[in-house]
Amino acid sequence: MRIAYLSPLPPMRSGIADYSAELLPELARHLEVELIVPAGFRPAAEVAAGFAVRSEAELPALLAGGHYDAALYHLGNNRDYHASIYSALLEHPGVVMLHELVLHHLVRDLTLYAGDPEGYARELRYAYGRSGEALARRCLATSIPLDPWRYPLFERVVDRSLGMLVHNDYCRSRLLASRPLARVATVPHHLSLGDGPLPEREAARAALGIPPAAFAVASFGFLTAAKRPQVLLRAFARFRREAPQACLLLVGEVSPHYDFASLIEGELAGLMAGVTVTGRLEKREFLLYMAAADLAVNLRHPTGGETSGTLIRLLGLGKPVIVSRTGAFAEIPEDCCAQVDLDDTEEELLLAYLRRLAADEPLRRQMADNARRYAASHHSLAASARLYAEFLRQTAAERPAPFAALPPLAPYPEVDVFSDLLLSVSAELSDLGISEADDEALGAVAAAMVELGLDEAGR
Image (cartoon, helix red, strand yellow):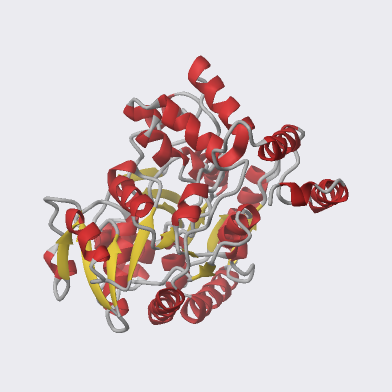
């Protein structure tokens, strides 16, 4: 079976690019894979070795000619890496690995910020009916942005796919709440620890200049407001008054869209003692900091439904981790990590965990052992590649059609009174705060429509 593989790839500076570089050799054990890349782009030689590489411009003819049995699209929320992949999917439906639920930023960049405000309004109308369009027009009129996490805009992607792959049950449940007929399968995010064994904690610390006796707390990855740096820095500053040898390592690049500098000069001024911000690192050095850390903190709110590859690596390395109790993070067993609630106790609970884990080395060792076993049994690269291949083969064999959206999600003639009624009912329910999870309310409305015979009117 031959597939077209569309994803960011190294040397692109993207977590999904690194993910694909790790996955491709294992996936090639099951399938014949050809890489489809933007015009003029050359993947890193070590990634492309052994694969045919073709331009995106060739894809339509290759698909039409039956050269591929299926196309696999990796989608994230970054315009720089996913704009052309998103456009290709809309034109040529295939299987989608959705790395995060929230695609609002991508869609907004490709419509509103590209000079097409009507396109933005159409997307909100398509996904959320009349209420969505009204919200979009309010945004256009006032420049008050919509909350991307409340209006994720994944709906058109699901509708244009032949099947959806996700990394966690949180994502799968959310997709099915909006699109109950969609074909959705879960492929756990694979564990990859790089090339060759990492040095032990002491050797890693010596290489990085971290004092041997320091209690090293670390947060890894692209730093944004969603990583809760205010909460982490406040809790760490209080903890360090009791443990002056503690250090906090913020390992990774600060998002250019996050004004961290003004934050630490303002609200967090005076809380940076013992804190190091590394900036972007090459993969080997990034992993070296993981090996050197005593404890990792991976807070997240809001979450776009993503599974953190960084978190999976930390678990695989046997590091005790503190996470937010939300989304996919809440799916990690509590004997592998400590979970912090997202309420007014968040900072206090984080501080309590820092104190307890710093003082209790046997507990840290037990969490580390549990984490290592869990990652090995649930996140193996070989198992993930096998699940990809099985779903792609099944999709190619069944040849499903893309999901057909029904009113109020799709445009309809103005004379279609039945569709207009459905749209009005849907919009009113949404405005009243009724969601897909409100089974009792939705069931009562559906029963009333059946009693009135309205379920037959649109046939």
